[in-house]
Length: 121
Image 1 (cartoon, rainbow, N blue to C red):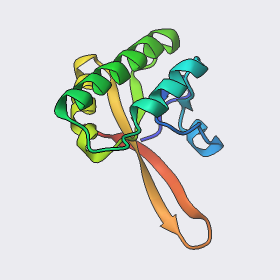
Image 2 (cartoon, rainbow, N blue to C red; image 1 turned 90 degrees about the vertical axis):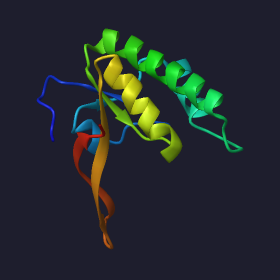
Image 3 (cartoon, one colour; image 1 turned 90 degrees about the horizontal axis):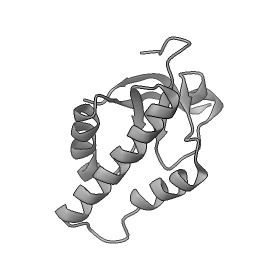
Image 4 (cartoon, one colour; image 1 turned 120 degrees about the vertical axis):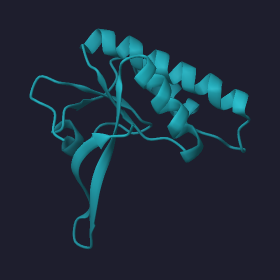
């Protein structure tokens, strides 16, 4: 699913947007501080408790919501540990934002290529 030229997708991952992702409308956060916080929220040195997951999901969703208001975006690129994906998607949907993931193709010559963005939930 390509977004139209006017639709932005919020980058709620711990990675900076590549030129390839930018072609799909993915945009980095406007705040470097928020980007650094997201990196911390997505890092788990030990297995998390449900309370930790819930708190981090809520914080990530709040960052996405604030960014959505700045960008006018409704789509959010997510990449997180598996145990966090379902609650994060549910929270974003609750806030009227569509969680997205990359649909990729692995290739021996080029590595991984993003073919499109697809709905995560």
